[in-house]
Amino acid sequence: MPQGTCVFFMETNSEQMKTVAVIGASNDRAKFGNKAVRAFLQRGYKVFPVNPNEIEVEGLPAFKSIKDVPGRPEMVTVYVPPSVLLKLLPDIADKGCDELWLNPGTESPEVLDEVDRLVLDAIRACSILGMGVSPALFDVGLC
Image 1 (spheres, one colour):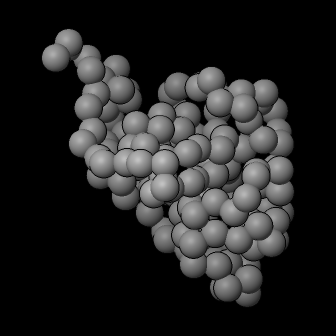
Image 2: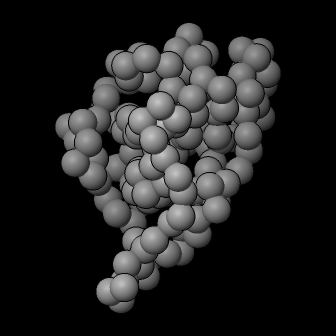
């Protein structure tokens, strides 16, 4: 296997492909919003990057809002500051998802209160680590 190749072992097929919306997706490969897009792609997910300032991220079309994502994603993972997330939570609740991942730096008491009020199933953890991938792999060029 060539050096620098990142391999993950996961069985996928189109009928079982999971979907994830990455809010705060970025073209800046140093940002976690970009690392998440790459990690989910490598794990076989159908990824919907969401960022009103990007046209595409990692070759995928970017959506201006979670409202623009086709269908209902199984997961929504968030990489925006709490002040921005507070404004987005009603749209996330309207779109629906099985899991809302609040990555480090996204939560605040106000965000958590609104998540509870909207009855969202929030997970307060790094979604990249939650998939069993180390974000550090992206820093050293292995992925």
